[in-house]
Image (cartoon, rainbow, N blue to C red; front, top):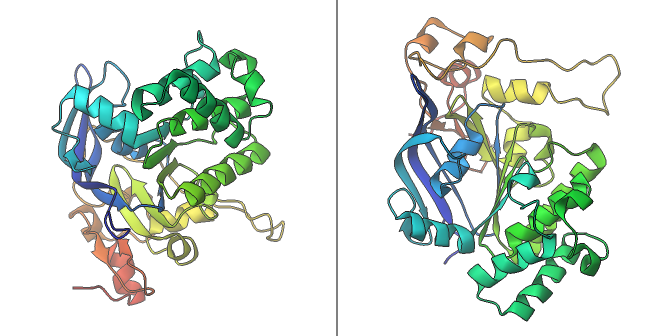
Amino acid sequence: MSDDQPIYSIENLFIDLYATTVSVRAVDGVSFNVRPGETVAVVGESGSGKTVMTLGPLGLLPEGVTVDMKGSARADGSELLSIGSRQLSDLRGRYFGVIFQDPMSALNPMLKIGPQLARQARRFAGLSREAARKQAVSLLARSGIPDPEDRYNRYPHEMSGGMLQRAMIALALAARPRVLIADEPTTALDATVQAQILELIRQIQREDGIAVVLITHDIGVVASVADRVIVLYAGQVAEEGTAMDVLTRPVHPYTRGLLASVPDFRADDNVATREIPGLPPSQIRLEPGCRFADRCELVEPGCRKHRPPLQTISISANPHRVACPVVLRREGIAVHV
């Protein structure tokens, strides 16, 4: 596969979640892709649809949730939305590695860490029992876990939060995946451990050339790891571009609001961060128009009537898309026809 060809692609994806009496449009017509060796960060507030968009096509949403998915999600020549559950399980196991926000959601508390990794390697990488054990120890070491031979025989409750997350990374790599999905991998960790985990993910991506999809609510964590950033709001893409362009030349008012809310410890003490006013809209009863209209300082009457198109613009030599015609008009930003 050429490095220019997507290794995982989602096209015009809609995901509805159903409860007893209501339905929620969690993902609303989203398209994105990731290429070999590329790191794509999906950023947005809690409830924006990041996790549902990324893990839904893999069949990894919580049990008991009724889901209706339309559109396309393709990997390894297969359409994930239409293949059978057994095929999806096999593809997910050998093609995707997933780092969950809560390691205990993926690690069995009743089993020792090492055998869990070895079982994954035997099932999806086709290794012998001894080869799988050696790989499990090697992965623990590579993930920065000290004394991996000893940790191999430890239970999850015997390890700290940071060590558990490293064990989760080792588990995600056990089947030698081509795409690594990291769902809020640093949320419950202190700042020092967060930086270590992000650096570990970047190192693995660089050494193995795998694609990485990083899901996070904190736009401040993506600067050092992401090649591209997708800003998601209320189930729709608000902005997408290279990390450099999105972080230094944001266009959408929501992206600008996210960046303004990140503390800058280099700035003067009198410079305060700004919170985005209001709350995201209910996705149970969707209104026409821009989802961000009620929180936007630049809102115009037309914003509430029509969904803003996601347009390709010229702010640098790199591809950049944004869904805000008001900013484009006011700031004279050219649109590619």
